[in-house]
Length: 230
Image (cartoon, rainbow, N blue to C red; front, side, top):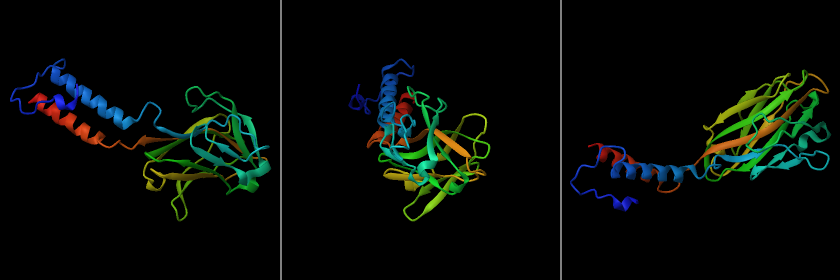
């Protein structure tokens, strides 16, 4: 049943029970509006790196395994390597394969850079799995590029005994929405020449920007519900 089936001038009260015709119409309108806004079951994952297949001996960049984006860890050169990964924070179907590791207190203040397309999306969140060695990077920052410079959004440490899932709410950062985003993880706090940290399952997720007409459809659904209850 479509919106044009609603007779606003009928002068008759709509059935108040949930199974009535009006109830079905309202439910259909809400479902339709929700579908327009959600954009599909996997629409919230904009870019993700499961690190499987990363190989610093052949390339110091890695394309996203989900979405469109590039991870650049060129600054670490030969001090980057591949270690065993984890299923912590993995997207459905991803295997616990590889993890990217970087090492050395000489690289305090050096960054891994993520660049990806956010067209059509807003309110980013970041999740990543990480762990470190006892002398590895304990003081790390999430930073974003706003077109003029780098800004700190969050900071985090890492466990020395087990993988941890870290999550960061980036929804207040307009500069990385609905266009192109560049963020980096700047490492710090390593105290030894072999001190390391590893990363796996880095995922940027967002809310889809409502499709044209979706909010209007939700408004009509709300109005129809009020008419039904009157």
